[in-house]
Length: 334
Image 1: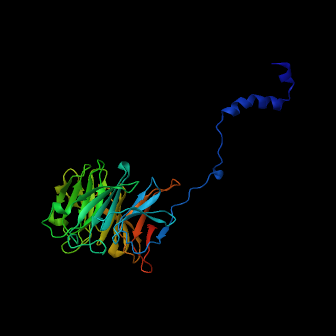
Image 2: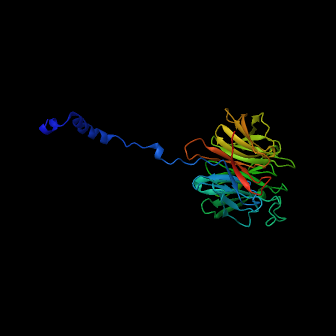
Image 3: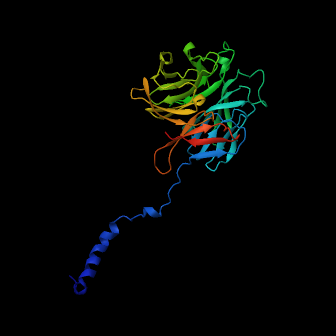
């Protein structure tokens, strides 16, 4: 040992020996110094009068909601500070209903119909006859395709494209509320009848409504007039079955597959969102909670991840409120 080293006090010698080891230790972060991500808002009230949005999707890439419009036809965006901005429009968009954001392909699909609630664009040729899907670039809002569906089945006097699901291959499935039909649009834009069956009819009332794709290869589809919930295999649509549940889903509108075993169902006429669970691949479904919305005619909902890493949230769309023409986007609490 060098003489100088041995002459140093014992404590100082220990520090010299430990310095190389301390250099190997990772730096310590003070978590208290890190900014805490803001929680997802409880409610967003949008000062955009008489828009009556019907469909909603959360756009994670751009941190915004996408909403449709029954009364104006255009597609818009909503940020957490309640700012509404128009994203897309076209004269053929009489009423936009359900939306599906195919984020991986940067597509936004919108069901287009005409129930006579947009006086500036309705006409005798489209009133209760129009069923189409408009496809947009999800970033720019540019219209890339407009696909007619009602013309596939002219035997039915009325049509109303309502909601859209997209499978893993990019095929879109669209419900018709005035005809007992589910349409299919492939990635090339070719439309066909995917399923047609009298059991899907709503009679003189609204029939087929919400639709979602399950990653195990089937669709879950709701019928508004009687609350029926169907499971439709992609590979064998005619082999569809009715999901057995004791929950009354009359007035079923939008659906959200929150996870593979949890389905949220908006029953607009009941002013309630129901949570269903299944442990047998949606042969049966059990009631697992509910969220009362009040008299706001809720239509559908979307899933939004948490920035803080916590559980995701479901947001319900209130197209209008009794005391205001504004619409609201509200976090569901079960």
